[in-house]
Length: 56
Image (cartoon, rainbow, N blue to C red):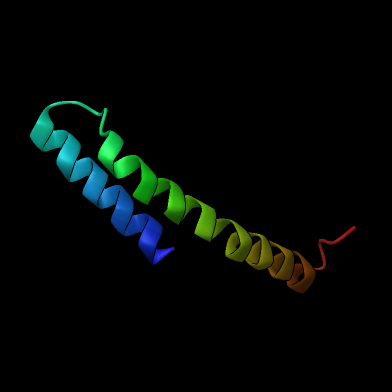
């Protein structure tokens, strides 16, 4: 999650400096961080549902 946060911060800073949000050079870094977050996010959600007794 930290990598995703840092990629988002870097993208935002670069977009502000450039005056737009189209920054292809940062897309790969951001998408790598998004992909890396998916599985830990799924595990966290599953464990939280189990802990709360919300599994069906």
